Length: 109
Length: 122
Image (cartoon, rainbow over all chains, first blue to last red; front, side):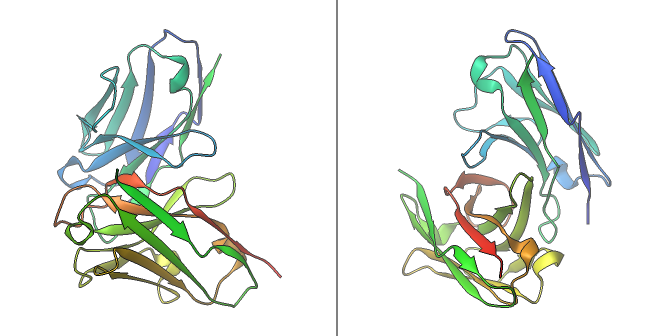
């Protein structure tokens, strides 16, 4: 099983700042099949990024994904108040073992 | 509008069984793989099981292997999760989830239901 580790656990920033969230896999992710999801309290997750760097329908262009192999990142270029939430990365390169990271909480400083 | 609506959650005693259902609408159900993903209280997301568009490919997390079964009825646009031998650690919100690309089993979820809560306790 591929273990996915996110850092930091919590990120405290102010609106307007740039946020960079990291995601590291224990093995290389096949075809860079790495997704990012946003979850707000009491809501299901929402897909933001798939295949490491492709924005899902409706994802604002201030969100960008990058990386390959075992190291990936989600960058939010300029934080809006609605961006403060929990973010999860997920590897789906192995269909028999799909795994999520433990999440990064992005909170208002 | 694409919609997934889960039902069947509730309070169940350890060792007992429960069946969850998911009603899908707004898309061609039989073109897409489907998944169950769960989230324990205050915890992160855990993928549980997935099934391809016609039901002949199923993948399962080790934590539920041999206890949980996923199935689908394409004629009814429905997805099911049969849970046997329930344990306290199975307590979670269970989400029904739609795979992204048509006619593939990817694991990348582009539509989520609102979830149904399962509580395993005596």
